[in-house]
Amino acid sequence: MSAVPDVIELLSDHIANQIAAGEVIQRPASAVKELLENAIDAGATEIQLVIKDAGKELLQVIDNGCGMSPTDARMSFERHATSKIRNINDLFSIRTMGFRGEALASVAAVAQVEMKTRKQDSEIGSQIIIEGTQVKSQEACATAPGTNIMIKNLFYNVPARRHFLKSNTTEFRHIVDEFTRVALAHPQVAFKLWNNGAEQFHLEAGNLKTRIVGLLGHSYEKNLVPVEERTDLLNITGFIGKPEAAARTRGMQFFFINNRFIRNPYLHHAVVNAYEGLIEKEAFPFYVLFLEVDPARVDVNVHPTKQEVKFEDDRLMYTYLNAAVKHALARYNIAPSLDFTLSPEIQQLSSVQLPVTHEQKQDTEKGYLYNTFTNKNQAHFAEKKDSLKQWKELYQIAQTIPSVPSPDYTEQAAPTLLVQHDTQPSGSSHNILLVQGSMLLTTVKSGLMLIHIRRAQERIWYERLLQEWNDGQTASQQLLFPLSYELPPQDALLLTEALPDLARMGFDISPFGQYTFVVQGVPTSLPAGEERNVLDEVVEQLKHESGDAVAKRSETLVANMARRLSRNINAMMQPEAQQALIDELFACTQPEYAPDGRRVFTMIRKEELDNMLG
Image (cartoon, rainbow, N blue to C red; front, top):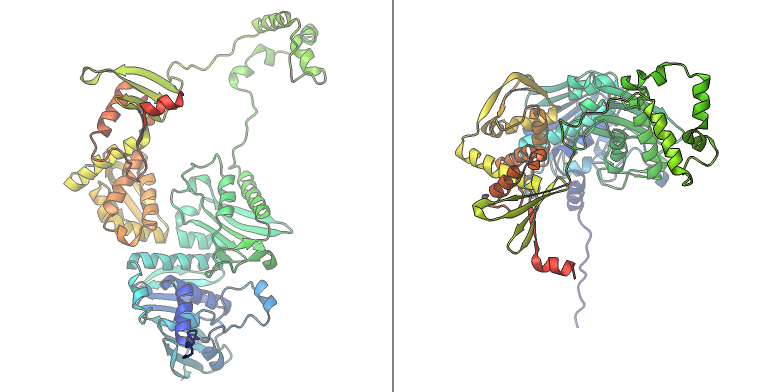
């Protein structure tokens, strides 16, 4: 009987590097992140990033850092090459970013790499050329001090990975995201970014505030609130935005732990919670916050990209951060405060303005209220005995006090939780109930139907707007005062790509400068003052657009507009409006579901009602 052959073999270095590259280098932006962090660790004070074809053709980083010797230059492309770790304990005390060469092996496995490097005290540098982990050449060369690394034709030997890259706009936006994070974390370093030969950013070395304005736009300049709290556990520094700087788009929230960008929904909630009562629930506050903590108290190795971390005590971090943000808002008189001053009506009362006489004081001390609330343990209940006599005394006292004008409720009706009326379409009688101000309950032959008002409005508006889109007849109205709309660079790229679709919806928007737009016209159906909110939501939607969503973008934009127009639930107080909503809903081609797939109505059949009542 022949022996079963062995089936487990070691992977070759070439394949192992390609697998590692899949974990570390997921798209051009991943390589940008690694190269920029390497330049920072090399002590660079000036860094240039050059991009061509959204990084697919070329990614180049030029720095004036310490440079490398010929031996280090070659070793930096080996797997597990590092200049930072000598024993296992070093893993738990690293404060730097990547280490020169940590990801270079992965990059070299999926690209053609050329690197020139020279140490500051050397007269001659070294050039090394690698393709798919194979060293093609290494020789001496003349080059400036520091390192110049070019990554060409990324994923040239992994066609499947290259195929899954998104559009150039999307990939470049991811590159700008990584560039922004590194540049924010190191305002003391000068940065330049070139894209297809055009300079996108020219950031001089400076402080954090100037870096925020230079990166994200001048609209933030007057809306920054400094945060600075230092404790034994951690230090919190940076800036948060005033409430008016909050937007409906994510992406302008930056956390850095020991100068490394991270994502942490728990800490994000701590910041948002501090803004409670200051911004709308749909809005996101702006912040750039740096948390400095003992590396032993935080694990940065829970995710391959090191953008997720685990703290030794999450709740304590939450508490400190929440308090720091609240303190900053309060210190600059932004947080809401209770006003204990008396209203003008009360201040004009004679009981407040005139001095208290001895006789009035004696009369007050004999009264029921005075004795109840000045005797110990009496404030929480009222005695039943002689209650009629005591309330009579209170009434007599009240008769001597001038009345305070009461609020006038005649102009606006109080909210109605339940309204019932009859309508008679086609000569038959129907009952419609307005339930909790957000749903309609109506009778049908088989039982009851419960309709969600806002979702019904969304479905109606969606089909109405989609019909206008398909007919090419979306009406537009010019704004009396054109609106200036400034966006962060990465968001401006997305909006520029969507301008043709927005024009077909009735928007008249033109670029004005590098990252600013002028809104001159909007759809006639859009309520005044909603222009910026709709555009914020459009940008947020584009950020999360999947690869096949470009073809469906029109439907998504129409659904977004329908959601914005479906917020007038107050109109449903009138019986005619309730019946009209039901009629319009069931004239739709798909009345059962809102554009996002949620149910618009549900049926409660007579049999179910009978079962409920036993």
